[in-house]
Structure formats: C-alpha cells, structure tokens
Amino acid sequence: MILGVFGEPFSEDARKSFGRAIGKAETETHQGVLKLLVSRKSKQQEIDLKLKVMGT
Image (cartoon, rainbow, N blue to C red; front, side, top):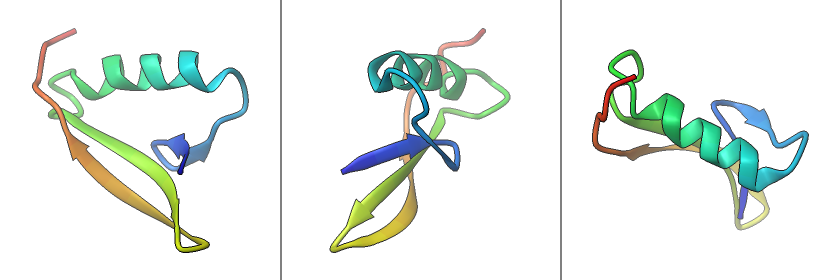
C-alpha cells in the first residue's frame, strides 16, 4: 500500500499528491527517482521507483 511520497505521508488527496510527485521525480534534479513510502507486511519502508527524466 502506498502511504506517501518523498518520505511524507499523504496529507491531502493522494491522487493529486501522487501526480505532483511524479512531475517532481521526472526532473533532472531528482534524476527520475520517485521515492514511495509504502507499507509491506505491516512495516513501513521507502522504495525508489525509477522513472524517465522528462525535464522541468
């Protein structure tokens, strides 16, 4: 289950936050890495999802 992005849990509409996070991850600054805060087997962890760098 995805709980948040870039180390922060969702605090508003998760769809909007997730969309903004994808845009942020696709920048040169973040090198296409989307950091997801997830729950697996009742444990929270952060995983990196590699996306294509699209630019700003």
